[in-house]
Image (cartoon, rainbow, N blue to C red; front, side, top):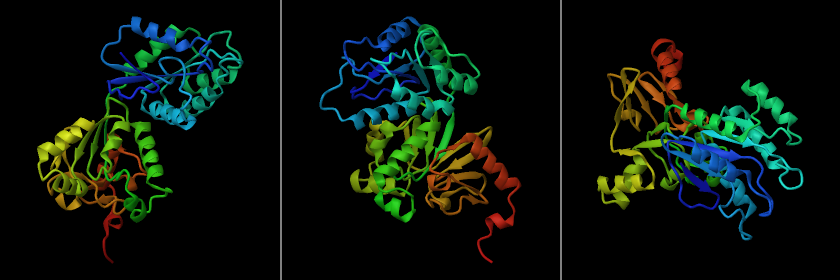
Length: 343
């Protein structure tokens, strides 16, 4: 078990993660319930690596120079990353009113990753009790240890899934303009792409990115183990900044947090059938189904494969189930009207 407090600089990347959400004391005179939670977690038998996200400083006191917006962004980033969110609400109206907790509870209610509880004597929790019971078909926990045991059990039930995407172009104002993405600027675009990615991709999932990633530093904010298949932008970066030394380029990206970097295409086993992953449609194979990117919002479906670029999928990565759906549709159901390229 590793703990990441607010203001910790090192990003953890264990197999599973739990966010301890709930009211934070407004004064160091009030004891944080998270200290008890940590002691309970230490006693539990946690097999494998688990990250625990604590949205408060280890000292219990936030820096006077800290911008409030920085606290909010830290919480939102780690709430998205977490496999499980514990909402423990020992509400005290004077010292821990939990107003923000109410908002965040509503934000993540439909995520499927909430465990909720509160002491029996905590006031003003009837609404949370009701909507949790309605949406999760479960009673709220009234014991912190039991709630944490459920979190651990829920975290280890998270099996790794595979996702596919392309052409995120993090940080690119040019892409924002020419792909007509509906954002004010590249920063807003990046935030939305990261948020949507982390909504569906968890720490133990694999993501195959089919090129034109953009700002490599953004890998540090993304869930999952990312294999990057090089696109034309990566090829240009390799030539311009790494003297065409692929090993040096790859090692640089691995040091940033990528799981693997593939110079050319990759054969992937889709339920016993081989499919080919590559960046450009022109590089696709003739004898199998293909996943590709490069052309952004243009031509999502071709006779030989599927465009997995974010512009064709509402800025979300594609799940394995979605790939299987489109593969079946392309091969067995879509007619000539889908593929016609001239009249």
